[in-house]
Amino acid sequence: MKGQPHVLGVVLAGGEGKRLWPLTADRAKPAVPFGGSYRLIDFVLSNLVNAGYIRICVLTQYKSHSLDRHITTAWRLSSMLGQYITPVPAQQRLGPRWYTGSADAIFQSLNLVYDEAPEYIVVFGADHVYRMDPSQMVEQHIATGAGVTVAGIRVPREQAGAFGCIDADASGLITEFLEKPVVPPGTPDDPDVAFASMGNYVFTTKLLVSALRADGANQDSDHDMGGDVIPMLVDVGEAAVYDFADNVVPGATDRDRGYWRDVGTLDTYYESHMDLVSVHPVFNLYNQAWPIRTAMLPLPPAKFVQGGTAQESIVGSGSIISAAHVSHSVLSSDVVVEAGAHVEGSVLMPGVRVGKGAVVRRAILDKNVVIPDGAQVGVDPDLDRERYTVSGGDVVVLGKGAHAE
Image 1: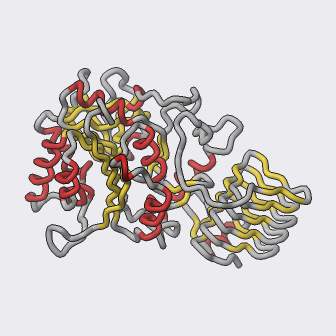
Image 2 (image 1 turned 30 degrees about the vertical axis):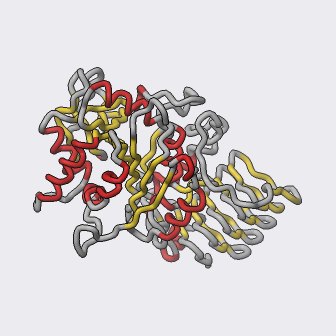
Image 3 (image 1 turned 60 degrees about the horizontal axis):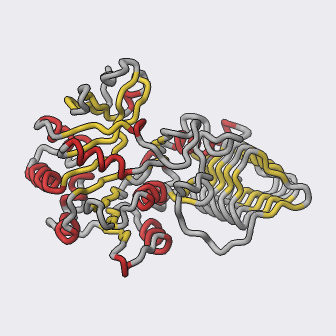
């Protein structure tokens, strides 16, 4: 856009998502449905597009068909105005091998950078739930003259050991980048919190290209952005931190400002859904000043018949709750809950069928799962473990198309 710096968006969407199994048995992690209407990748793409970044390459690899289809059908921008969001599969451009890490994915795709010739490259992950205006991070990056700017979110120090952590001085210069440290460093202004890396970066293009070439030539590298490239740039004094707490998103409430979730496990995926359904949600999907965008399916509105009810719940289009009770749950599109059934504290993806008199508690049901009449899921822990996947937090998970017993 006129007057704006020339920015290319690169979204890293090749993740296998092993810890989300069985939700990733048939799809890439960024393609996992979320929040009743969306897929995980919709959050990062919405943030970039809302900020005015409309040239975006999505690097894919693992079981990418549903992700590719979603991007090409839901995210169609104006080619006349030079706008695009395009999935880019691994193409073995540097020899007969797939991507060996996130840095290698970009290194093997540098033709995209050469073709677009941007001044700056925004490299974001594809599987986090949050709102952010990336343009504010780009503005800071340009103002400081840093080679790379890393987004950091403040977390309590006792929890920060689960993340890559940033040690920065008072000027914002990163002095050390630590992967899951036993003793996380405090922030310059608060020793009780630490900067955890959000996996979002802004690069000056020339520096990124030279860093990727150096990393590609290093046979001892794992070719990972957070594990190898960022520490390399920290060592030469080119890395700065961007405090996510400084990001101002239009329409944010006091309750959901600064929300960010890494939904890397079944339990965090489940907990993130529970954040959506309270009266005053921890994360508000209804902020139209910064919308989360996705494909809108041609389905009728949800219907409640014969006394069917849903309390503290999200119910997607085309769903029917018939003489049944739903509470503290997220139901996607085209879900049917039949007479006498109870669904409590659960996540139901598109096409799920819950039969008459069935009970579903604290469960995740993937697409087209069928719960027969009278069946119980989430009631008997021992029986659930014999039949289904059960997370460390005792969430029962049925994979795509499964039939409960």
